[in-house]
Image 1 (cartoon, rainbow, N blue to C red):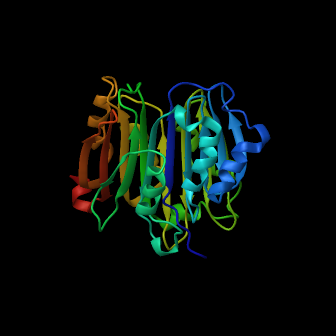
Image 2: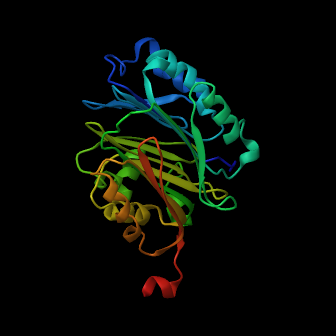
Image 3: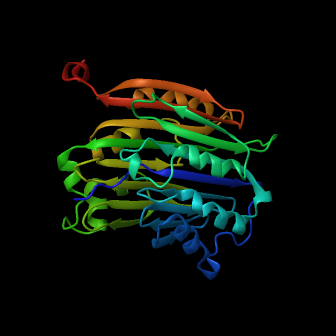
Length: 315
C-alpha cells in the first residue's frame, strides 16, 4: 500500500462580521476553493449555522463569519487562499490562523512551512512559531490579526494521533463495511449527542467524518496505512472539562503517541479550559508541555504524550 501523508495543514479565516450569503455555493465556488488546493468535494451537510464539506483530503467548514479548511496528502492548502479572498474580500479579514504539523514524508511535499509563511505574509503581516521539539512531534503556527480585535469565547481542541494499533487500523480499510457502520461500531456517533454526521470510507484505505450541530463541529480523519498510520480529531465544542472527550477519542483509536493542542480566546470563560487537559491523558505519559499566550488574544496549550509503561499505567 502506497504511503500517504496524514498530518494536515489547517487554515482558519475569521471575518470582522458575518457576511450574508457567504455559505451559499454560488457557481460552485467552494468546489473551486477545494480544487485550488488539489482536493475535491465528496459530500456536504448543513446545519442552521454551518456548512461542512468532506473533501478527498480532509474537510472544509463555512460559517457566516469564518472559514476553516483542513487538507492532507500532497495538497497545497494555501493555493486556495486567493480563491477564498476573492469571495470574502481581504479587507474584511480580522484574523488568520495557519497550522501545520510536522510531516512523516516531507520530501514528498510541494511546499514546506517556510514557503507557506512567505505566501501568507504577502497578504497578511504576522508571526510564526513552533510548538514542541524540532526532532519530535511538533506543530508550526502562524497568526495575523488586526490590533484591537476582541475575540469572543472560542476554543478548538485537537488530538493528533500517530502509530495506531494494528487492530484499530484494520477497521478503516475498504471491505470492512460502510462508513456509517464504522461510525456506529467505533462509537463516533456517541461523542456528542444529536450531531448530524457525514462520513466516507476510502478505497483502498482511509476514513473521514464530519459531525455538526448548530455552529459546532467535530471532524475525524484516519490514515491507517502501516507505514505512517495517523488520525486527527478536532472540535470547537467548548467543555468545562475535556477529559471525557479526550479519553473517548484515545479509547477509539488507541495510538502509541499523540499531540494534544487546545487553542482558545483569552476570554475569561475560556482561560480555565487549559487547566483541564493534564488530567485527560490517563494511560499516557506527557513528554512535552507548554502554554503560550499570543498578542492576537488567543492562547495555546501543547502536549506530546506517549504510552505509559505498564508500571506507570498501573500506579
